[in-house]
Image (cartoon, rainbow, N blue to C red):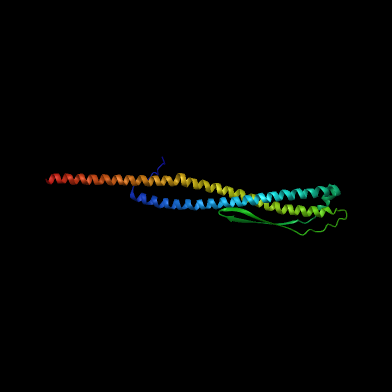
Length: 209
């Protein structure tokens, strides 16, 4: 049996509860629509995340393939020296975004033009490594954005689902049960009043006779 709210069974209380119940039902409908939208967004974001993860894995393998070849040709010491003083290969901008109450970073990563290396002993594969690593980093930045967004959307979806369930299975039923109880109490009180009036009239009629 659903618990009732601790409110006295009066007509004014019933009117106030009915207004509150109408508000709660409207809030439940809005949360339900939000939950449905979040569920759709989570599915779309999950598909994006999986595509980026597969692409990132492919680019990581290709970048480290060229890195291993260049390292064998140049040696680790020369490879490190060649990388000293190079300007960043990426330009990254991170801005906050929000959608349906979900805040997440919007990452924009772009490759910068490769600067020529003046060292005579660098291998031709060195530029290939730089290019592949930059391509990999761009996709990894997008993958990071997709993963953070997905996690926050899932968190908001679960939180919204809990609120929907609380309204549907706990709060709204309590209000409905309390309104029903007050209605039955008022009807019983009205029947008792009518019965008392009838008894008084019968008593008065007997005295007149």
